[in-house]
Amino acid sequence: MTRIVTALSRFALLALTLAPFALVAASDPRDPDEHFFQPTFGDFQEELDEARADGKRAILIFFEMDDCPFCHRMKQQVLNQPEVQDYYREHFAVFSVDVEGDVEIVDFHGNTHRQADFAFRENRVRATPVFQFFNLEGEPIARFTGATRDVREFLQLGEFVAEGHYQQMNFTRFKREAR
Image (spheres, one colour):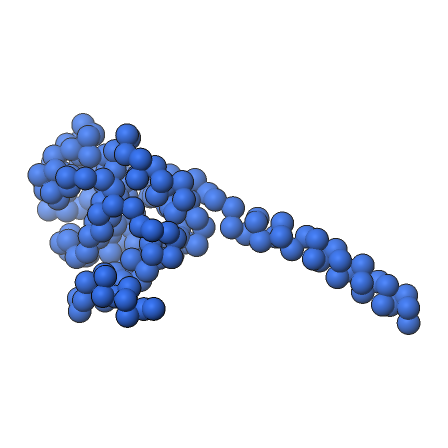
C-alpha cells in the first residue's frame, strides 16, 4: 500500500513540476507574419472571392507603418498570441497594408492603387494602427483605430464583428454589455 502511495506521490510531484512548462508551451507566442496575416498578391477583389469560398465572416485589413510603436506593440503583445491567431484565422481573411507603401494593389472594386493611396485616400487612414473590417462585398463594416488594451479586448473586437453585433451597436457599448 505504501508503495502505491509513494508512486502516486512521485507522479503528482512530477505532474506539478511539469505543469507550468506545459502551460507556457501552450501559449508560446508565434510570429504574426506567419500565423496571423495571410499572404496576398495584393488583389483584394480576388481575396474577397477566396474569403467567400472559405466561409469567412469578413476581411480584416491591418493598416500599419514601420515606425509605428503601437503597431509594433500590437504585433509583439497581441497578434502573436495563438488564441488570437486561431480565432481571427477561423473567422476572417486577415491582411496587412503599409500606409507608406508603394506596392500596387487592386481594391475590392477592381481599381488599382498604391498601398499608401489605398490607405489614405480610399480608407481615410490618418493614424496607425487601424483595424478595418470589410464585409464580403468589400464594404467597410467596422473600424478600430489604435492599439487595443490587451488580448481580451482584441478578441472582443473579433467577436463584435464575427457575431454581427456591429449592426446593432458600437464597440464601446458591446464591451460594456459583455461585462
